[in-house]
Image (tube, one colour):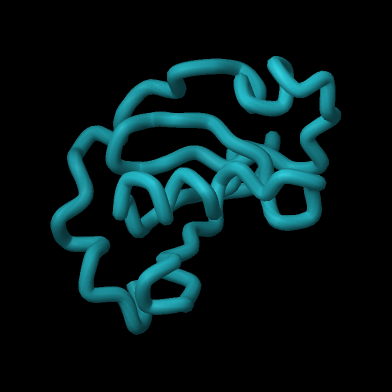
Length: 86
């Protein structure tokens, strides 16, 4: 893990996904561009290429710093607080 002081504190195993898509986008009738999964609570949200940027909003609302891609075949992680791939 690179440049992230939060990755060591992540729960193991990682939490189950709480949804299959971004629930906030569903409520708003928007289409999520890419999905992200919070590695603290399992919340699924859309990325910053989506109109409402719900994954970043989740970080700001909860302080949960690390997420990973929830797209098939992708496993990269991002720490919002340290602004780095982990």
